[in-house]
Amino acid sequence: MLNDVSFTIHPGKAPLPGAGEADTSFAVLPWRAWDTPEARGAWDALAARAGTPNPFFEPWYLLPSLARFDPQQRIAIAALLRGAVPEALVPVQRARRYGRHRLPHLAVWLHANAFLGAPIVAAGAEEAFWEALLDWADRNAGASAFLHAAALPLETALAEALLAVGARQRRRVVLVHREERAMLASPLAPAAYLEHALPGKKRKELRRQQARLAEQGTLAVARRHDAEGIAAWIDHFLALELRGWKGEAGSALACAEATAGLFRESMTAAAGRGCLERLSLELDGAPIAMLATLIAPPGAFSYKTAFDERFARFSPGVLLQLENLALLERPGIRWADSCAAPDHPMIDSLWRERRAIGRVSVAIGGAARRALFGRIAAFELSRNPQGLT
Picture (cartoon, helix red, strand yellow):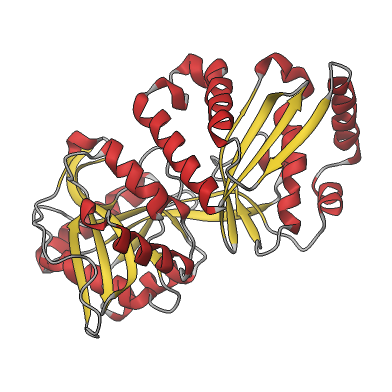
């Protein structure tokens, strides 16, 4: 919640120092300092070099998110700079609450529609980034008891670098929660993958449902990677999601101006950059199931999906996911993150691989603060030990 965060920061020099400077520096600036054409361009170039891709922290998604959820600029962007070139970038906040408890801490900032918390770090610069961030956190801890990173992909060079830095500095790095969500990663072609993933009886049932659905009208699949018709596609998606259970629960994107606006702006930008795959199952020209996938090579991220619940007996969402297995053959893509909750009843049965995601807390500051963190971590682990390694 925005009323639970604050950051005492003052604008310094621009995030892109003058060309020719070769020193490494670490800057923590108001996020709007990065909302310039020059800064965005450097940010884009960094994202292309990231060892762990994360479209939710790329400028076309993060800046619109911050504009809608943090207009007071309480959230900052921390960046490791090598001369004029950013080597790492992450949004940070001073959070006043930790879960249900009033417990000030530093944290990587996320919102409900950002499904990965991996900082954008150039491949090979992971340890340098964590060292710089933790050094800054030590010197600027304030009332914060620790540093927390949520939705961190665990089996990555980024996570391994954090553990290595913690071990070298004798700094506690604690995995306080671990979960696994569905992932698609296989050398198999789509048809072979489906045969491996689902039993013959289930595949036969899906073929029957597809045939019955085709009897209702002209059934077609539309797949686009460009920006043509993006405004109409967004309108259809928002309306389709709003008519379903998310609309009834008040959690559909269109239920709030901020989330609807974020979806419109970010999907338009993604389509214009060629990093959005739009997949639709259409009946008589009208979409009855839709999926937005964000492309961040070598990965892809299933961002949002919606389906027309009037056709639920035909499983249009599952039928659309069968078409989505074409990601296995997309050039430059080696894996896809479902961004789904663990044990998702639909995607877990179809996507057989798993991606480990964790919440990690890190000791900062001096001896007294680290001792306090040790007690906090011990208490949390004693209450929630399941799934931890």
